[in-house]
Image (cartoon, rainbow, N blue to C red; front, side):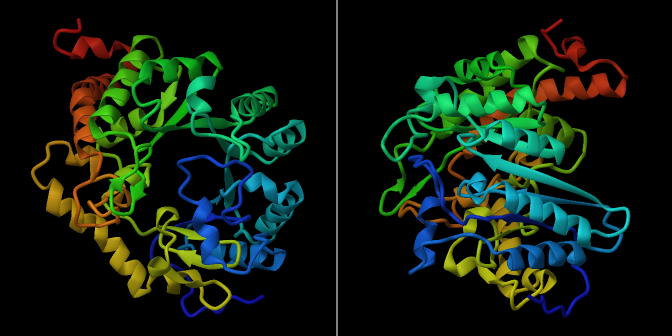
Length: 399
């Protein structure tokens, strides 16, 4: 397979999330936004990415990065990426080594539900230095409410077994916890359960599900509910776990309060540099915008720089700054939020609309307003080369 190249490199670094098994999964989570993507591939019953396409992507992705790029990250997701099997990823690593530039560091991230993680998988992931994200929504009762098998049975016990395998082999990992209407009132409970399992790195992802004719589903976390959840987690974290447990929302906000760029696309000022490639080579604007109107093309016929420059992607890139300017211009927390994820701007008809106010706007404002004085205090600690745990010396009323 050949990638036709009309531009040698992209203008800016970019990332491509890979769907090696398409939307297929061994779970049937109620809130999953990707399972129904099978309808975009009629008459297909297999969704395996071919080896030829795998190598074409790896070669094109590396070659299309701007000159001087010294590190690239390959992100593997699904569906459930373990369904593609270990041998597929062994070949991927071989292709990465074959095509990487001299001196280039190649990293791999891997998002899994954890059900199939066993000793063999954990050893492979450790040997090849994968950063693994594993999904866990709290304790067994909370987790099993929505994260189920097709027979309705919960997945908690299998996920924790997979987590223990990652810990056994010292695989670098974090836990991704989805905040929804059910666990959204239990911030402290969720956080304390995760840390009781030995988890030190946590990501929280709020669910905002569109529903045609209604707006959002009943599973969608409420705006104030989300804000209270994050504040409750923050307060629990700062009681005992500063410097021991790392929550991505807190780390990112601290960095941004110090003038650093967001490490998360959710709170970046713009979108457009995080594409997704499906199992058949189709490329879309973003993982949350795998819809026909956001299909950029296929790498069998176009190279990545050309796909990034398509009118579809350029219009998509302008969407977030425009919507932020419309709704966030006078917001005191804009510098930490930047309007959050455009995919969660849902109108009353249940449609994504860049001109709509963000569904969680009020919650983000609550959260960022609450933690802002603590961020400033922690920033002062860093400026004075003090451990962040001494933040209370710089917060009024906390001495």
